[in-house]
Image (cartoon, rainbow, N blue to C red; front, side, top):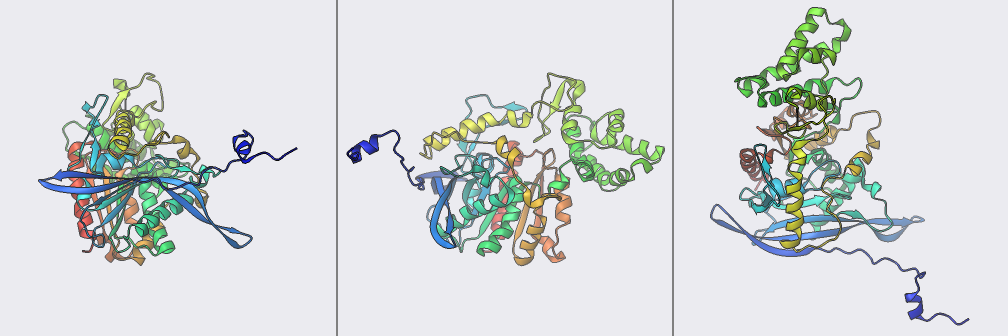
Length: 495
């Protein structure tokens, strides 16, 4: 039987064909933005960068194999000196979240109009220029980790290989190294901006980039910070979160009228004092508390949190956060938001123990989704038929913390070591009083326990806002935060 011709082989449905080699698909566009009568001309570069890994076969180098395609959007100011111009690498958290929130909510040159608690924006939503963009002070690179946004593992590779603490650091760190090298920015002041789990990623990356690549940073922007998961996870035998959440509970209760006309600052001062002294003592005493001591603790905790004394007594002084959001306004048929306790929504089942919806996400995610999907195609000229994964719960639930078996997930040691090795590393921490996901008092606790010499504590600054996890949803907070971040970038750039 004669051999098949080349044409027949190519047309045969059983013929093996190798998939095309992945390649960067970056698209460049140019834009202008007017800020306070100053015209900013900038370049946007959008698309996926191929992440490759050195392959060894039988101990011999066997090339660089494509492993993943990572989506990013970079904004660089035209006619600026790359050597002196700061650059900020930004990402959100989850884990499993894209960078859409920081990108279109706070830092980027365009922002989505999402509305707020008392003024929700109706569909089809919209975009406006961001006069408070950090681009005034720093170039920006927004990174979507693998399986978020348009980032994906390449054909034949396992996405799960990137869904873990260590592998995530390595892949995001490699993208930062590649962008820095390819764009000639090794001598630029460099910053990382992370939100939520992204703050833990940023703190750990500070150490990883120093140790792996000798890439030293000027600063970290930690927005809604959580550096030690042990401070926010309600696990058996860990009483710490039950105390550290109390000031946030008190703030949310105050917002919803449970403290009358008392000033918020007074309520927070009382809650912080109780959460620092009496409550930790009462929790560790357990059954050794006298009846009078227990009664006093129950009364104080109920008064601060706005809950009924009978409820506080029944849960043994240990108020879990989602149960709090469900219980606080039960008498009104409402539940508060977790990400932002100012938000409320109706709970159809008045007997539920755990709320069925977080209004602080469901009320705004539609605006972000519509805004980005429009923006990336019509203004950044990037087309991709993949769904843009804003927040993947599949990734979140499958995330591996194998490096922390038997102990809490923490980047405290990594950040402490990075600050000791780089005494010029500055840290800005942004916190919302109504943030029920990463409570501000837990962040304060962690910062006070960093293993750094006293003289380095001045390298850390904290800013507090009357808002929630994404404090930029609250317009006055967004405007003030833009000023605070700009001042930090200028101060920490050492130029």
